[in-house]
Image 1 (tube, rainbow, N blue to C red):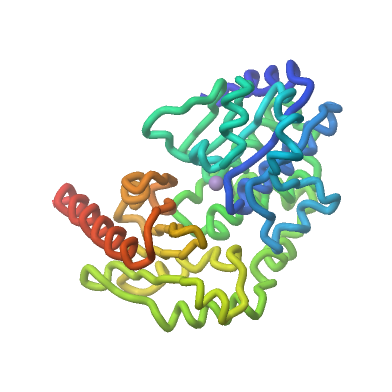
Image 2 (cartoon, helix red, strand yellow):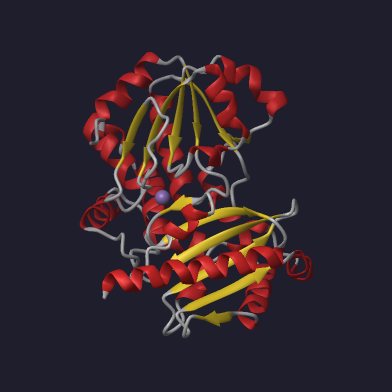
Length: 335
Ligand SMILES: [Mn+2]
């Protein structure tokens, strides 16, 4: 299942490589890219990191040389033509690479995918290493280096791996937390990583505007299905009033899930182009990626997302109804 030689060979055979992760990137995607960035540098490869959206502020310390670029068709399409290998990390769904995917597909680029998201409908990648039992893609990239070239597991690389695993497991608290991720964390500490400092850099630097938005959200949480569902909306007005930016909403859906009696939470975020971004979280009884998949999105059983076209009020009704319907289906199966 984890055929790392294939990845090693694909990298060896490629002269020019593109690295990317999903839009609204998280610590797992960013940390995993940083690990491969170190590896490709050691291998003297010509590579670029192209992103669909900006690095959230709390992760910018992982990119001290500003090597993460935002994909721009005008600037990058010619370079993309000559890419021999596109390496996708933690992508979940290929269309979460936005316009880049179209270019990669048209160019017939070799695509290698390393991920721990499920692919219930198959995948279009040349090489696919996906393992849903891995706590994070960071755990997989650790496994790659550990098997292929353990000497590259330096303190710096361990920092990126630790960030990937810590953020994707909710600081070792979610259901995906496993033996391996604790073992890797121990290795990171042995290598000299200051885990408390990393935690503080990521979770101890919330902006005031984020907290102001969180206050507005907390004030407007709605409950449904006998209090098992907690949901909230973030509209453009709330964003403007608080002065928050889109990245600030990361973690809000987890916050709503943390309420006593709540099993499922979701956020409806109003985008500017008559569409909404939906985030789903589950405490562990309900698989909410089924709801995300219904709306064309995807993700893990207990953390998933989707994009829905339509106005805010249309979307609220659709998403709430479907969530409860799918929860009821799962309650029937359990009985
Ligand atoms: Mn992940």
